[in-house]
Image 1 (cartoon, rainbow, N blue to C red):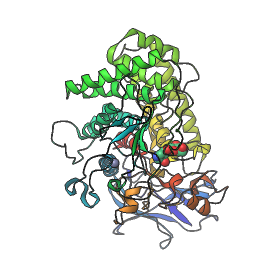
Image 2 (image 1 turned 45 degrees about the vertical axis):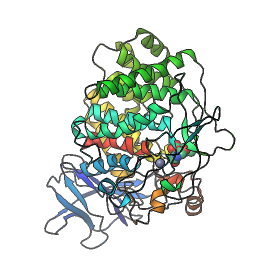
Image 3 (image 1 turned 180 degrees about the vertical axis):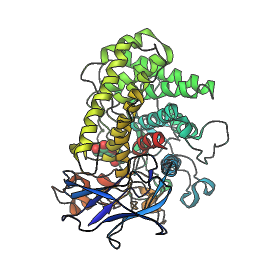
Length: 535
Ligand code: 9MR
Ligand code: ZN
């Protein structure tokens, strides 16, 4: 028997469940015990039965009625087994949110991370050599700044734009929740989440070409071996444009222009000018220009089948910024019945258009357009509510969605549910979103918290080059793992996880497992969006 809990904590006022996996009906009672073992409350336990996501036979213990703050664990039959300990408190998610947001500082490229801010993870400046422009072979001066994408040291435009998009919308919708981060810029009068996003935005501005189009990525030809970033001195290439990168760039620069306007008028103007140049390029080039790695280039592909959703996000943001009627006309044409309107992913970005339109000042966008997005969020969320009530771990996430980076999908489902609560006032959606947070923080068959440093079972071996090379046992705090992947492609995971393993068991905390245990900026950023709502 195993008792699975969120190992960080539950909010005082929220429903609180522990999942008990046991092939047989438990004969004894379950108790919620406070950590100094002075109080014990017997819990009501009900049978769930066989869970399709894990194939575990589950019982669910309900301790929603306990509202006294403190540290607790759940115990079976006055002896064993015990769950990990956790907190019940008004805001258990503030500490993980801080670390999840501060992760971006550790990902900064092209500047020294000093001991003052990076502690033991300090390292020298990196990736600051000259750059070859792939299209014509020209040698360019260093293009520094931006965040390393993930466990590799590439810098890719669409993933970077999407990560900034998550963070800026977290700031716009939940400003009071965004904490101070102790950054080199802290104390300059600008909220730290904006200080951190600016580091990426300044880099994005450097990879726009003269004609307004935007490079797809700036990387070496192939992934480096495990080494510190400053040791990776292979030649950097600024690769060719893609329409996906150009549209994501235009969208996030237009969004950022409106967000930074109250803090720095000149920066806002620069962002606006860059956004409109990228938009105008795309007006002149209506065809989808996909990205393919040229011969010899083996770094991340980040391909996309369609750029319609990226153009839709761009036009929503540029229209909101400039009120140019042409943008609205073109936007309306793109908002078809079929286009995705709710996803905040790296290749489906329709949800960002949704956030832009749904939370704009009233009357800016026509009602019938707003209504299409509202309906899409509510319909998706109703499906997720039904799914969550039908599986034992209460995952508000489809069973077939456990691929590479599934924790992003888990958090994306939560984000859609949160938006639906904001739109409808119905708390049921946010409650389902919170069940996914419990999964992320350890309430799963592996007892694994997918955020480093958060919870007794937190994963420790992210596929992350500095973690492999810095000689420090603990990884950076606040990293979100890619998560369970029912179709792993790396050797360690393929060896450890037999084909047909139930999705919730398909994770390996191994530094070599890039398809289940890598880290990425946009996995952290969407998690930050969700945690900013609950914190
Ligand atoms: O996050 C990406 C995931 O959705 C894809 O399935 C996977 C394979 O194409 O690539 C992931 O992105 C990786 C990128 O290509 C390179 N940097 C590391 C990213 C995270 O694994
Ligand atoms: Zn670097």
